Image 1 (cartoon, rainbow, N blue to C red):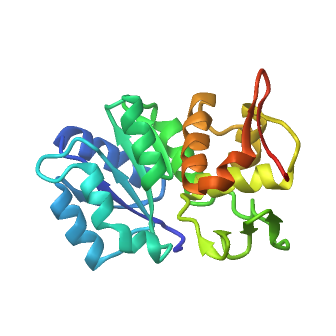
Image 2: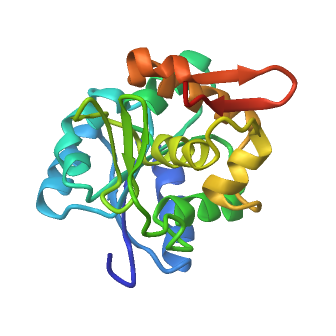
Length: 229
C-alpha cells in the first residue's frame, strides 16, 4: 500500500460525495469519486483502489451487485470494501458482512469515527497478526502468515474481519471470550464497533464453516468460544 492509500468512493448523492471526499482527502487519502456502480467498476478496473467505500442504495446497479463485480479485486487481496449506507436493516448487514464487507457503517456517521474505522480496515496499526505457526482444530486449519483458513484443505472465503475473529477465538481455543474482548483482540480497544456487530460476524462465520461451525458456540451470559472437540 502506498503512503497515501487510495479510496474509491461510490456515492450517488452529490453533496455527500463531495463532503466525504473533502474529509478523506484532508486525512491524507487519495480519493477517486464515482456516482454510480457502473462508473465505480470502470474506475476500479483502471486503478485498483486500496479501499472501496460503497453505498448500497445506488441507481442502476445496487451495492451488492457492484461488490460482486469487484470480486476480482478481493481475490487479489488488493481492495477492502466498507459499506457506508443509510440502511440499518439487519438482513442487509448480515448479507453484506457474510459475502464481501470488511465493515458496515450506517449513515449518519461522525467523520472521526469513519476515519478511524477506515484506517483500521486498511491495517493501521499494522502487525496485529503475528507470524506464528498454523493452528489446526479438527478439520479446520488457520494460517496467519498467509491469511487463510481451510477446511479439509479447501479455502474458506472469509472477510478480513471474519478471519481476525476466527483467529482470536482459535488462539484462545476452549476459552469463552466476551464480545468486548473479541473486539479488543480484533481491532483494538478504541475501535468504534458495536457488540451487536460481533453477533453478525459470528453468524457469518458459522455459515461459512459448515459442519465445523458447530465448534463455534455461544456461551450464555459471556460471549463465544471455539471448541477443540
